Amino acid sequence: MMRYAFHSGDAGLLRTLLDEWKTSREDLEKLVLKLEVSDDPELADDLYNRVHGIKRGSSFMGLDFIVRLCHDMETLLVAVREKNVEADAELIDHLLISADLLSHSLIRLARKVEEHDPATELVVEFDDERSMDEIAGKTNAILNKQKQRESSAGEAPSVESPASGEPTGALSGESALETGGMDSAPDSGRFHPRPEPPQKAALTPGMQSIRVSQDKLDKMMNMISELLIAKNAFMHIAAKLNVEYDLPEMSKEVKRVGASINRISDELQNAILSMRMIEVKTVFQKMPRIVRDISQSTGKKMELRMEGEHTEIDKTIVEQISDPIVHLIRNAADHGIEPPEERKRKGKSETGKITLRAYHKNKHAYIEIEDDGKGMDARLLKQKAVDKGLISREDAENMTESQAINLIFLPGFSTAGQITEVSGRGVGMDIVKSNIEKINGSIRIDSEVDRGTKMVIQLPLTLAVSRGLPVRVLNETYIIPIDYISETVKIKPEEIHAFNGKYFAHLRGDVIGIEWLSKLFLLGERTTDHEELNTVIVSNGPEKFGLVVDKLKNEQEFVMKTLDGHLAGIPGISGSTLLGDGQVVLIVNPIELVQLAKK
Image 1 (cartoon, rainbow, N blue to C red):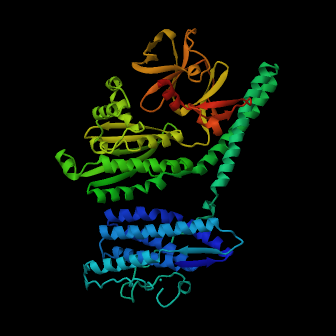
Image 2 (tube, rainbow, N blue to C red; image 1 turned 90 degrees about the vertical axis):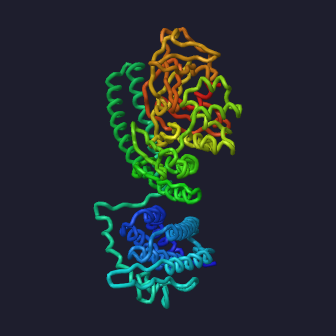
Image 3 (cartoon, rainbow, N blue to C red; image 1 turned 180 degrees about the vertical axis):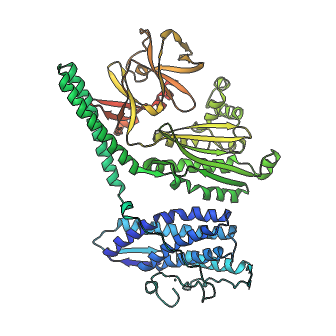
């Protein structure tokens, strides 16, 4: 057990260093995996510099355990950079284990700093000394095992790592604080690392930045949300002055002031939202390790391509989408990609390809997971669903291929025996779909047997502020989020047909289900006494559905407040919001409404 104690003043400095190391720590695994497939010496340089930066600060703080671990990684990286060892699978595995231990230690340290009471001494303990000894021993074995490459000057000298448990290198005969974390030869002067390249200058005076806590950003976002409600009230007051009080000039003045407030609030909103946006690479960088591990455990050959890593999405969404993406990548690698022999028989390359991409389109963010594996057979999926009693044989026969593929999202669809027969895609897919819908997203699947599968996730750019369409149903007003609305149309009552207790209509060649929103919310029976029915066409991904309402209002921004207690479980309702006139209205969940209508 290694124990480190810091004064309260040192805890603040430690927090600053941890913030500086965060990016380097998060990028270690990604860079190590790149080192395995690229012989670019700059990669080893980049890794070395990041590890060295952590070692230098740790040395200053007296964290000799982290210094020792960093120095051990440096020894290997220098040897790779100087072409004295090869970055083979054994070396990469060892670097990944070392990076995991380093990351784990720094995260533990950061947690202790955050929980620290400033009035007390900060104490941090590490119980990984045995793991460090094993890493040091493995490093020594790797360096001694690798054959030395010949150079123009003759046989290169061997590179040795200190024996397990002994002081390493940035530390023999002098303390870390005395050396200040500066470089020394990894061994007795026989092998000297290339000098560290000069660091780029810090931010220029015009590019300075500061760190702001998430809590402060959330508080500012809540204030902006209240401002949005207030700005909507201006238009309502202006209309009231004009219609009810016959004061058109006063109405114009209020509208003018309202327009100014509207412009300012929009600029503030955009500024705050931009602060909350982060790149999806924070999620993407986990995936190469997952694919590599599955490749090694299954004996399959596969490669992962990543596109659009710099696509920005709201931080809250990025955090919540991580687990679903991990699950989909695992399915693509473990169950989608075939073994090399099978791929060869099908005339494919032995190496399977998985593509993970992100991009913006039409005010949404999209994440796609695509593989060139075995695909999904709609016929087998329907048969399995019938065998499980999830659907009737008649329903199965009437299903389109797209509807059949989406059967994998049904709870309880998969069984252990089905993993082999139907690609194993259904394992936990209902949970994946549920988690995506919780953040107002949707998922659809395109698949073709022996050609591959593509999962497309549609996400809002932010959860903070949304746009919606207010609709009137009898004496109630509801808001339907714009993200789910495909279009609004007017349908004549005679164009709506009934079959087996359900209603449907033809819309430009497509057959879509129809239901009255008043019926779904138990407000009244279906009405057909109008010449035309206002219908909102909503989409849950693969299919569309029509909701009949009495009146459509103007689209507007809204800030959703979640419902608590018993109200939180009402099907078809996501939350509530406040209109400009002070009226509280409910925000509907179109996905759940479609499910209600089908029942």
